[in-house]
Length: 107
Image (tube, rainbow, N blue to C red):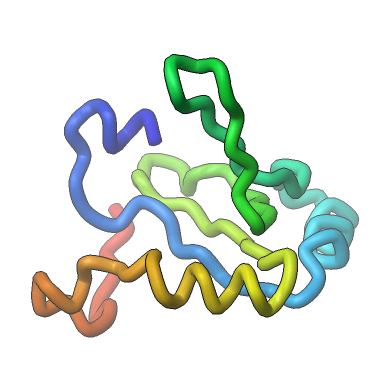
């Protein structure tokens, strides 16, 4: 989020949908890969008086060294939440004619 807020535009994080985020977290931890603990995204709204907790958990691997890119994992709480997300959280890639990633250059 800091990169975006500081003006970076483009790919920042590749999110992978997983069935069991705790299992992924434990597996990567055992392999000494630094990863954040799975947690629900929360944000304040209505003059910071209310907190909204999103119906999914995220966990992130650190950014690649020298590259503004990281990999994240996401697990939806349930199918109802997934249907909601699919209906309302529509990526803007289609509007911008982005249909995939054809090349990644790491310098």
